[in-house]
Image 1 (spheres, rainbow, N blue to C red):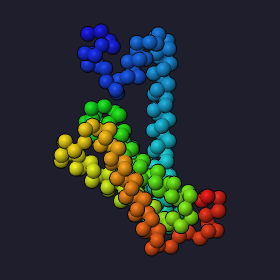
Image 2 (cartoon, rainbow, N blue to C red):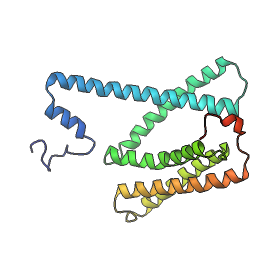
Image 3 (cartoon, one colour):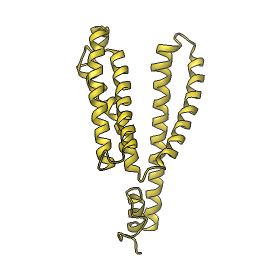
Image 4 (cartoon, rainbow, N blue to C red):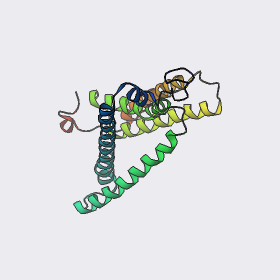
Length: 202
C-alpha cells in the first residue's frame, strides 16, 4: 500500500514524525532534521542524567545518609550514580518496547510520577506549613496509589475503555492521595522555620 493509507502498517503514533520527515523533506533538509532530533535527544539525556546525579547525590545522599564527607567522596559517588542512572534508562527502553506506541508509555509514566510531583511542588511553593517529610510521604503514597490503579487495570482488562482513560484515573488517584497524605503529615510534623523559606515560598 502507498504511504499514508489506512492499511499501511507504518502508520502509527510513534512513526508520525519520521514519516512526515521522510515524505515532506528533501534530502538535504532531511539530514538537518535527523541531526536536530539526535542532538535534542542527546541534550535531553545529558540533562536528565545530570539532574538525577545531582539530586540524588546532594539532596538525598549527602543530606540524609552520609553527611560531612570530603568532596572527592561525593564526586566518586556521583559517578557511580551516573552509571546506575544510565543503566536504569536502558532498562526502561525495554519496558517501552512492550507498549503499542510511545504515547501510551509516556502517559503511564506521567501518571505515576508527574501527578504527585506537581501536587508536591505546588504545595511546597504556596504553603509555608508544608514539611519535608510531608513531601516525601505524599509523593511516595501518590506513586503507590497510581501503581494500584495500574495493577487493577492489568488484572481486569475491562476496567477502563482505553489506555488514556486508565492514565487519567492513575493521575487522579496519585494527585488526590498525595494531597491528602501531604496535608495529614504536615499536620503532625515540624515545618521549616520561616527564616529558611524566604524567597522560596509565596
